[in-house]
Length: 590
Image (cartoon, rainbow, N blue to C red; front, top):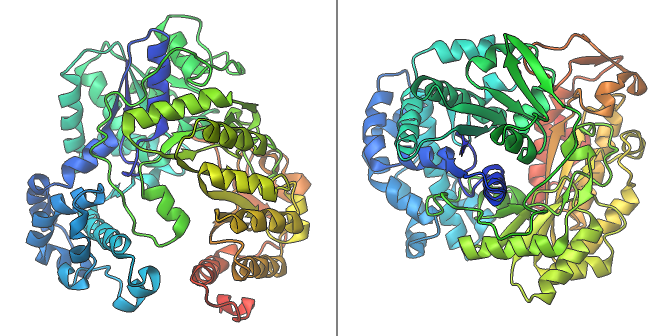
C-alpha cells in the first residue's frame, strides 16, 4: 500500500495522517509506504529549473500591475529562489542580515515599509525579519503561478470551488479540462514515484477542500495507468462532507471512501475482512458498510516499535512566515511533530461544534507513557523536539500526566495544543506545563458575552475564562483565542460587548493572539440538527447529492454580519499590536 498526501498543504511540516497510518499498518503486517506529494510538488516548482519555464509561460496571460512587476524582475526570482528556500529551511543563517535588508529586495511587491518592520521585529529580530521577507518573496512567485494555473495557491489548490459542492458536476467539469502546467508537473512526480514499486492499494488523504481536486487528478491518473490498483480515499474532508453522499460519480475515480479513524477500515480492505465505516459502489449502487461501527485502533494502542517518517523528504520542508500573528507563526514556522493526547473532545457539548462526528463525540484518552514513547521516536527520526498536540481540546488531566512524564524522563521539548479555558487550569497546573515545555495554547472564547456564551453551551463563564487566561499568561504560556460572531439570536449590541471584552483581555495582557470566525451552521452540530432551539430554521431540508456540511439557514431580524468582518479583524489586529484600546468599539465599524 502507498499512502499519498495530495497537494497542497502547509510546507513547514508533514501532515500527520499518512505518518500515523503508515506506522500502524506496517506494525500490523501490511507493507505500507508514504509519499508527501504536496511538499514534493512545492519543492519542484519553487526551483530555478522550473521557474525558468513557468515565468515565460505566465507572460502569455493577462497580468495585473503587481504581476507585471514580478515578471519584470524574473531573473531576480529565478536566481534567488533556491537560496531563499534553503534559508527558510533553517540553513545559511549567516544570510539573515542580507535578507533582512529592504535594499536587497529590489522594490519587490508586497514589501512592508521600514516602520512596520521595525514595529514587528525591532532591532534584534534579524532572523525573524529575514524569514518574513523571504516568505513574501515566495508569495510573489506563487501569485505569478496563479496566472499559469488559476486554482493554485500556496497552501491550497482549487479551494474556492471545492468548499461548497452540492453535486459532483463541478469537479467533473474541471477534470475534463486540459491539465494545467502545475498539475502536469504533479503527475510527472507521481509517475516517478510509482515506477519504483508496484502497489495493490493506494490511499489518498484528503483533510481539506484544498487538496480534493488534486486527489482526483491523481486517482484518475492511477486508474488510467494502473487499472488493477485499488484506490482508497479518506480524511477530514471525506468525514465531514461526504457522509450523506448519493451521487456515485466519484467512484469512477476511486474504489472506497473510508470514514472516521482510518486504521481499521483500511486494514479490513487490505485483509479482505468485512468492511467497516466504508462506502463502495457495487453494481452501480452505493453500499454503506457498517457505518455505525466505532471500533478503534492506532499507534497509541499498539506496543511494538514503530517508524513514523520513513519515506518522507524531511530535508524539503521549509518555513513560511508571512504573518506576524504569533499563533499563525507557530502553525507555519517550525517542524512540529503532530500528535494527540486523547481521541475526541472531553466536553463535546458546544452547540456550534460537530459533536455528532466520531472524531469529536467519541472521547477516550491515550496512555501517556505510550504517547511519550512516540515523542521520543519522533525525536530520534526527525531530530526535532517541537510537538503540536492536535487534540480538539487537550484534557487538563492528560496534560498534567504528560508534563510529569516529560519531566520524569528529563526530556527537553517544547509543545503547544488546543484547550478549553476552564477552571482546571490552575496556577499549579500552568506552572507544571511551563516547566515541561508548553509554550502556547489556543482555545475558544467564542462569543464573549454572557447570554450567548450560555446559549452555545460552552461550559465556561467570562470570569472562569479570565482566571485560566491569567494563570496561563503568568507562567509565560502564550494564548490564542478563537472568537465567533453571528450565532443565531446574537444581537449587534452583544457583538459590541464581545469585542469590548476581547479588547480588555488584550489590554490586560491575558491574550496575545486572536482570530474571528463567522458562525456556520453544520449538519453535524446541535444547532444544525435542532435549529428551532436557537430560533432559526433551515432554508431547505433536502440533502445535497454530493457534499453536505454547512447548512443554509435563516432567522428573524438577522443582522447583516458581513458588514462587521473587516472591523473585527482591524480591531483585533490593532489590539495584538497593543494599540487602539481607547478607540470606541462602535467606531471600528464606521
